[in-house]
Image (cartoon, rainbow over all chains, first blue to last red):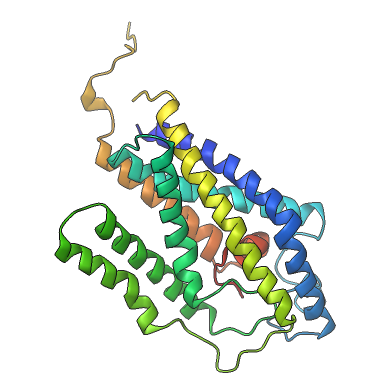
Length: 227
Length: 58
């Protein structure tokens, strides 16, 4: 069972990650690189890590611009997609999806949990945008994803109205508390670039999750399952 | 001689809820490494993925 789950997740994850990588290569990464040009031009402070970071902080390895960076991103996308697929597949083992349409629904749920809900408070930002401390944002992000997953489960996977209400509350709470925000919002990249980046990441992640949800049910249902 | 039969007894297979929970935890751990690990090398390798997916970065 477990081996089958890992195998079907890897298959679906890698395929969906390849699609995401192609979309990003044409639409998202160019915006990140453009934003980094503003960062370099502004000779951003020591915390900014741009392609030219080694000039002031030559400690950590980083992929060189070009194929190294592309390969790094594709590999990271693949690992991330396999991680998401493993979580979806864990759910499928408990509730076998009847077909591709349920896969689509699981994909949309994943998009809500891991993209839409966190980005309501912490929208995807370009390099060079001022933000609150990274640890507090990561904490809020993770807490929001967990609360949204818990809440969606209660809302959609069971029928008791009292528990549904609890689910809705769980989903709203992180947003009532509010995401950690910087004291002053500044961005090196122009507003138009930020807006474009937010659209690009919203749509590419939507396409990614749609495909991942459907593919993962296909690989889960159709690959041989031997204990 | 020991021969693996194609249909092993059910007791040898991982129970379904255990397999499900293991997959979810493995996935979550992997997600923490790709999206959240503070180690500079990992951060640099996953930088563009983190930005493009909306993980808090920097």
